[in-house]
Image 1: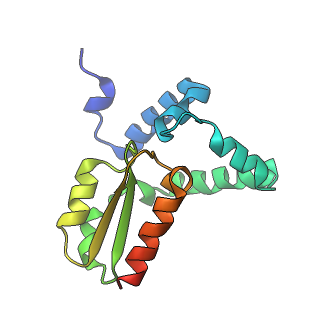
Image 2 (image 1 turned 90 degrees about the vertical axis):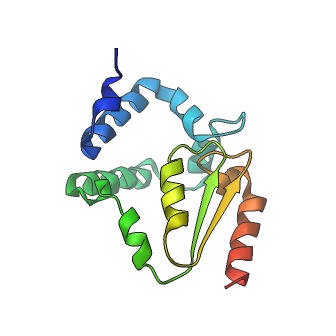
Length: 144
């Protein structure tokens, strides 16, 4: 049996299937995004932020507007070559959000591009490996 998701071509349908799958995972969904043992660190960051649940809920309103508007589903990879400013792409070791194909396309294009792969981090290297993340940004900016 072929995976239904593997047959889907429409980005909106892929997103809907992905969202349904994440919802089915419940609290285990963080295991997809976080490298280390502490899979719930982001929940503590939310609580420590001082923002109310209503304020955090505004992010969902914003996301829903982006999804209904639709441009978020269009690839911007072909526009990379039009960018004239230096670019930095940072990817965590187990971050599946940026695919290898996307990273390769980023690196193949024109312009001054830097790529940093941060080991022992997932989708949130700015939290999981903050020291490395900050040092890489400093290095990138100082090399300009």
